Length: 73
Image 1 (tube, rainbow, N blue to C red):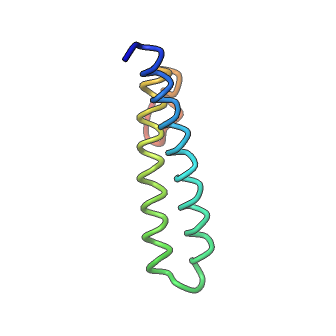
Image 2 (cartoon, rainbow, N blue to C red):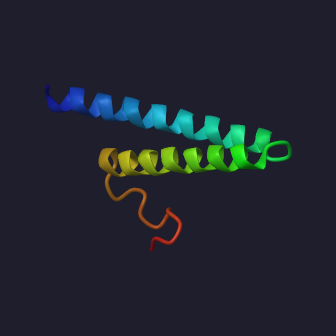
């Protein structure tokens, strides 16, 4: 695999993680009032995908995201 193909795969993975992040965070909001335990689980899953997306962001575009993350700076 060449570097262009590797970059395309990383970008695809980053997009997928971003979609999953939004899906789980939205699911958490939907469940919050009626099922707090499931809402917490969905929120944790959303944060997990957020961490994956942020790691891939840093790989694809190094240094661009410095200071943007919570606690970074």
